[in-house]
Amino acid sequence: MSKPHPFRVLLSNDDILRRIRELATAIAPDYPDAPPMLVAVIEGARTFARHLHKHLGRAVVIHEVRASSYGSGTVSKGTVDISSARPLAVRGQRVLLLEDIVDTGRTIAALRERFLADGAVDVRVATLLTKPSRRVVEVELEYVGFEIPDEFVIGFGMDYDGRYRELDEVVVYEAARAASS
Ligand code: IMP
Ligand code: MG
Image (cartoon, rainbow, N blue to C red):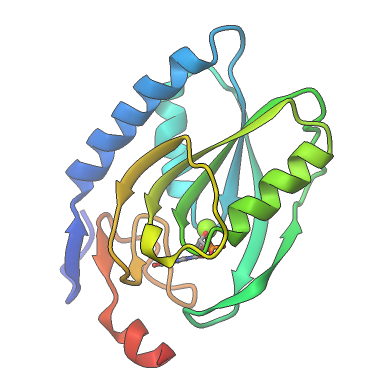
């Protein structure tokens, strides 16, 4: 367990892990022939990806893609930079994108467009969290852990300026709102 912290807990670690197990149960039958190519949007989705992967069991590697629409604050820049340490061979693959949180939708929209253009057979999305009220670009999310209100959250892999990823829970970072307004 992580150390005590001053943040308001939105989702406990138990809630999160239980929901990830349910997501895995929903995902597995949708890929009866072969496991999907798992692509985690780093850094934020690493923790989610690790837990989901454990339950999916069959897919061997988690690929990683870096996409940043955020600068150092909490406000989206509106453009998405996509990069990966290793080239992602998505041609002919069924890709399952793993994301921590979908906010404006720009990141997922950009990644799906890129992977489809690169020849992926289909691109689905599993996201731990979504903030529907913040959407700027409509995106289809096939597997959603939790819908949350318009709050900036941290923990379970999600950061504010590189901090707090290690928290076991998803908590509300109140100071972020003040900092961005
Ligand atoms: P989008 O392109 O606006 O949907 O932004 C998605 C990305 O923004 C996510 O992958 C996160 O990295 C980041 N993000 C959006 N909302 C939050 C939040 O509440 N906490 C931490 N990161 C967030
Ligand atoms: Mg992310």
